[in-house]
Image 1 (cartoon, helix red, strand yellow):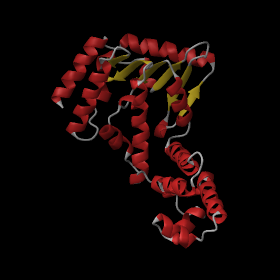
Image 2 (cartoon, rainbow, N blue to C red; image 1 turned 120 degrees about the vertical axis):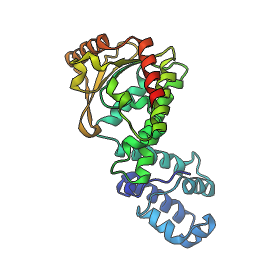
Image 3 (tube, rainbow, N blue to C red; image 1 turned 135 degrees about the horizontal axis):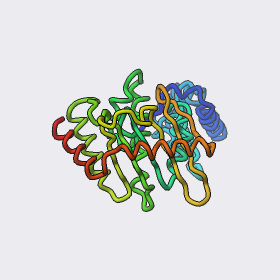
Image 4 (tube, rainbow, N blue to C red; image 1 turned 120 degrees about the horizontal axis):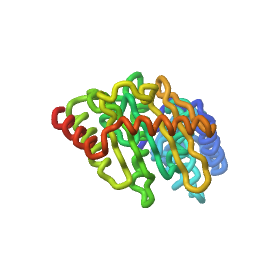
Length: 277
């Protein structure tokens, strides 16, 4: 079962988990060593969790719920909160808020100048992109968070997705040849879905508004206004909510799309580059 990173021990939720454990243990009249014997761990481990020196594992949380017969799986619910908090802490500033809005959007329009859009990245591609400077457990959480985004495409009511990708993105070698072929194949397969459109902006387009950088526009059901997201250096980004600024992004998107290859030609180009990889 997954293990939370030790970097989370500064989190108030970790301390709250430890306090909850201590309260249950003392109410049951158990010493740390005795409880450890009952759960198959050491008293030292119980002490480290109670004092937020170590974050709990999922298996440990489940064992605590089972032993103390918590009414609503209190320990595992708190572990799930820790897991979500840990992922968000690792994400660039501004991105967690974007992910929440993205999950609620009915349509997604995205232009990518540097990398394959995160929503369609394969595990191998994402891992290679994200690995720089990351600890193994942090990298695993970042990759998992990125892969979870594609789940929205499997919903009964998936969002309508338009993806514009600069040609340099599909020709930039990320990872091994196998990694790039698998990634390009994924773009083609997902791009053939009725709710997804993938278009490539060819190098021959020359100067176009997409050279200013990557961005996304989210639309929602009802009267909720559109929201933009502009990517910055290091993966950091800002949400754009002012109507005039969102409108400017929409105009920029339409101009970029006008410079892009038609959908059928884009898929043919993707296939050609994949075969040459």
